[in-house]
Length: 138
Length: 138
DNA sequence: GTTCGATGAGTGTATACGCACGTATCGTCG
DNA sequence: CGACGATACGTGCGTATACACTCATCGAAC
Image (cartoon, rainbow over all chains, first blue to last red; front, side, top):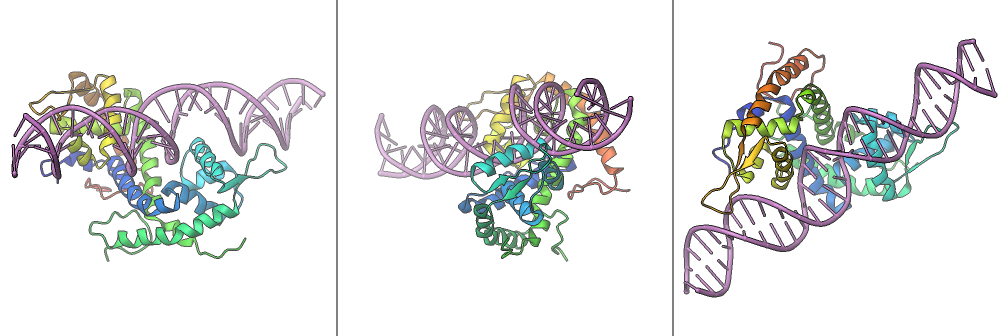
């Protein structure tokens, strides 16, 4: 309980507010995903790949709204865990990523936990919202 | 492709949306703060300290909504840059942080850039909002 | 076929983030 | 005083994030 801390100026900065909210949500979701050995970010990459099929890194990063080089590192981790792999194409520049069977299994296994996390979120007071389409605060 | 599980719900995951938004906003603000050698997170810590005065790490982290150990590392960087320093108190456990003169100068110098970044944000279409209290589209 | 711009991608470096775990100190109770 | 829980804090480790820079490849122009 921090009764003295106000930080009103901090709260009025959308960047800081967004970071704060993202941190809180990440902690929340990570806690539910942890038993499955997944993190929020990794979950998002796997889910995106599951829906997109084989996708080159640039496009995947773009779709997820993160820097290409960031995805490069994330992909390394996921590849090391055997959840994704790199395909080969005619164009030697392209290194499309694709979900492996193990990746699909991990994703499926984690999905209920993710849904639970989402559900608990909506039942929380002052639950952070972010333009997601589920109706909070009617 | 077995397609056993419906993943469409993950597209509207508030955690992913929040992270995406935080990344975008951070990139935006960082671009404006870069000439001043500051990052969004560092700016927020300095701004918080400027308003709170000497503050123990735990409480500062709590106020900023981040993990205590995360602040420990951030504080190291800020201390290395001479923007903050650690005070001593009666209680040897406490290590309150306080803004240095240089830190105050850096914060003041960066403030116009921060305001510019905020202004440009509100002029953007589909500008990310996060429950911040400043009046958008006044 | 060589040059050259465009495209896809990796590396170096630095910061951000948090969990698990350990340490030092303080206040209190016996 | 000594034991003990509470408090404030740091470390080890792994992941997340992005900018600056470099590399490899492709397609087209010459």
